[in-house]
Length: 170
Ligand code: SF4
Image 1: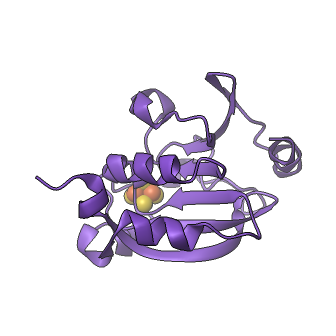
Image 2: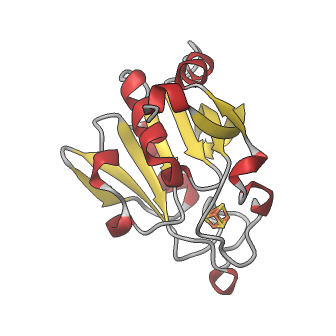
């Protein structure tokens, strides 16, 4: 059986973003594949893992390891469907600050994800019934940003300005 380093991850793209970590420039890694499949998802083109290209963890981390930002966002698709790849990427870049976007609730996440450099988690599935207004950073009001402090995660404010100020301090 191949280990995760050999197996790699199915990814769609790696981009530079000014929105995925609110108030920060970041590198964004889009995983392909999502088993959650929320009604009204804007990224349904990434539901199928075959929408991505199988890429080695070494190549992924090399592209993410840029000098101009400390922040890396893991999005998709559903990154936690490729749990071992997420963990391996975070472990390979211990000096980077990671932000994980997941459609799972915080209590559903595998605790092995909670590495020292996973600073931010945006959790919760997209819900068209709870669609948020477009001025905010959350697509639906049930979703939540959490930040790491010590060994625990705490909820961040949902208002955009307060959220950006709090993230600035991380
Ligand atoms: S978890 Fe994200 S990618 Fe998956 S269906 Fe929901 S909104 Fe779409």
